[in-house]
Structures are given as structure tokens and as C-alpha cells.
Length: 221
Image (cartoon, rainbow, N blue to C red; front, side, top):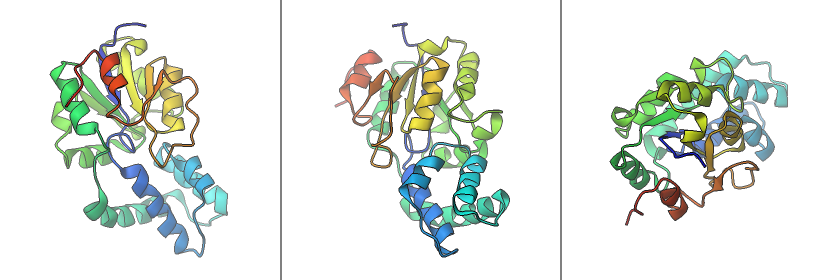
């Protein structure tokens, strides 16, 4: 195993609880059209750039809507939900503090647009401590393609195998694995049934002591 020199987090469902909120948005969009959201469609949309996710919804239910229409409607619904439901995933605050104390450079690679990521992360004052954020709208190929993590490695000036990547979904974890990073899956209730074959570790939560061990950090008490 190569020494780890940097840490990269996915955002939705890894730092923020947004992966639990997005199905509420999708469910409301479909409810307005007399339809219901299935778990299979939720899984097909999870971790993917918004245009790809909305196209999946359109194809799944043979909707007449455009991606742009669904995106605008989604933003309006999501804005209302955020005010009452946005939060951090369990263990993130403690882990983030420990990583910073250990002087690892930290970045975020997300399928969300960069502007959305900056907005959401900024609500918890996370962005000042990040080296950079790469949004799904800044790469040609979104997750599960490895481009976003290969781009991060270049910007961090380290090898992909020297980056610990935290991902909650099969889609994101595939991108991290294919890029050759040290992929750590952190499934939650929304992704506990996903396959994480190829991940270096499947953590219970971000509190998992094995994370601190692999990053050579004292366990936060």
C-alpha cells in the first residue's frame, strides 16, 4: 500500500445528508405527475450528475418533460427542503477536524454542480479548509467514470493511489476504484444494499476506527 498523502470526499451522502433528501425531491416531482418513485429508479439516479439523473427519470417513466424543466422544478423543491432538513453525516465533523490536524490536503469531488457544492458546503463553513472543489459540471465524464478523481490527483500533485477517497454510493465508489485511489465506501441507509466490490474498505460510518488507523491518526474521542 502506498502512503496516503491526501483525502478527497464525495459530498452528497458522504459529507451531507443530501442523498436522503434527493429522493424526497424526486418523489414530489413524480407525485405531481401521478407517479411514484421506486427504489430501483432512486438507485439508478444516485451519485450521477443531475442531467444524467433526470434523463434516467424521463426514460424510466416516459415523461414528456425536458431535463431543464425537471432541473428547475427540482431546485425549487430542494430549496424548501434544505431549510429544515440539511445536515452533516454522522462522524464527518470529528473526522474532518482530525484530517486537518494531520495536515492532509483535502478536496471534494461531487456529481453536483460546483455552484451547488460551494453553496451547501459553505452553510457549514467547510469550504475555507478545502484545497478545491470539483463539480460534476467541470468534467466531461461524470461518475462512475474515473475522470473526476484523476483530475483531483493531478491538482493535488499526488498519485491516485496516494489519495483516500470517501464515497457512499456504488456509482461514486466505482469512479474512485477505477481511478486507482484508496477507495473507502461509507454506505448509509440509502446505499446499504449497493455493491462495493473493489473498495479498500467498507466502513460502518465515518466514526469507524479503521479509517483513523489507515490515515495514521489518533482516534477522536
